[in-house]
Each structure stands twice: as C-alpha cells, then as structure tokens.
Amino acid sequence: MMTNTILLQDSTSILAGLTFGWVVTIILLNIIYIVAEWKIFTKAGKPGWAILIPIYNIIVLLEIIGKPWYWIFLLLIPGINFIFVIWMTNLLSKSFGYGVGFTLGLIFLSFIFILVLGFGDSRYVGPAGATNE
Image 1 (tube, rainbow, N blue to C red):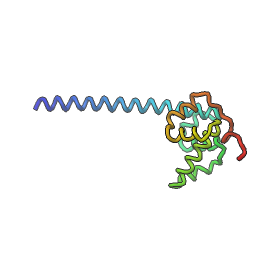
Image 2: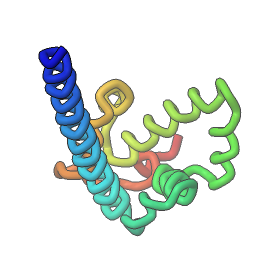
Image 3: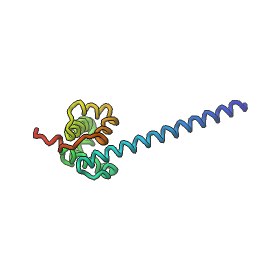
Image 4: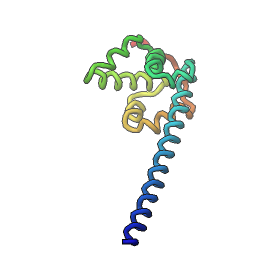
C-alpha cells in the first residue's frame, strides 16, 4: 500500500512539472508572437500597442492591407470568414512585398513567417503592395 502511495505522489509531481513547463513555454511563445506582430504594425506605420486590443487590432490590420473597416463583419459569417482570412493573409503578404509562396507560409507555418515579417528585414510597401489591380 505504501508503494502505491509513493508512486502516485511521484507521478503527480511529474505531471505537475510537465504541465508547468508547457504553460511557461506557451506563455513565452505567445509573448514572442505578440512582439513580432507589434513590430509588423510599427513597420506599417501603425501603433504597435493596437495588437493588444481585440477587434481594434483587426481594424488596424484592415487599414494595413488597404481594406475598409466593415470587412470585420464579413469575418463573422461562418464559411465566408475562412475565405476572407486567406484573402487578408495574401494581402498582408503583398503589403510587405511578398507573393503567393509567402502567403502559403503565413497560412501553414504562421509562427515562423510572422517572425520573418516582424523581426526580419521585411519592409512595408503599402496596402497590398501599393499596386493598382
């Protein structure tokens, strides 16, 4: 009986340690992600702190990619929002002078490509690349 109690205490402490490690890792990754997005906003000439305000950060992102603020309502429609998020991601990529390959990177490996936009030498070239389409 004593062995089972010790075994249970050991496994509980191991689980607590692993959980704490995961929580700390997730918090650190989120901080890095927020700083990268902050830098993206500042590169685009917008206030970095805007990334911390829910809904307002999407409105600022829409300004960065050159779309009207009311697009935020399109993000509330199930199914349609998926299409518009991909479109917005493509426009963000173009706004920093990248193409479809970078857009795919932002979609499928977003953490890495957001870091490239934020911490790399990416330059904001204007809403959706400042081209007339």
